[in-house]
Image 1 (cartoon, rainbow, N blue to C red):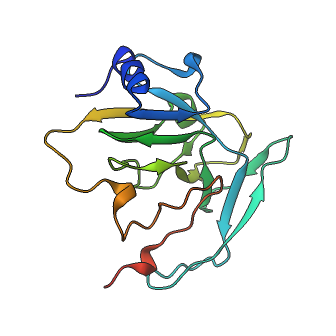
Image 2: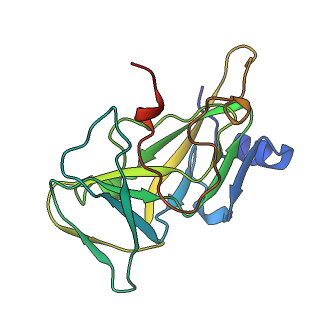
Image 3: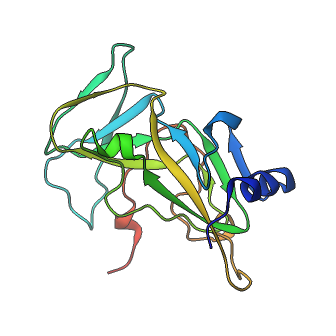
Length: 178
């Protein structure tokens, strides 16, 4: 089940969901709108290697915006820091974002119970499009978990994305054994 607006508010009051900064106007019928932070990043290499640490270069979106180009993967970040202690958060693009040809995640739309951080966005576009820091970029949807969670994400020793940040984080696939 997906949480309704009233249930999201109840869970925020209980401390089970944390959104900072929080703005009541961003609460939808069954989701919460999140915004693009000011930091973007691109990979230094055009050829990425899943077994190696692929380094990124961070930059800030200027006030006049930044034009995304097709065939480039941009890593962005949400302005909002979130914590989800009893629900599974899903990040989806807003329809207005999609109608501009912007995808905000390649595959990583699901968070884990216990995820406490900003969200790194895997941004791509169908055609050149100018984006701005602070623009609405996606929406969080919260699902009820069936059963007890044995290990929260923020308590896992091998969790790769636990370090609190306001900047996009590159893939940590290279830390896996394969």
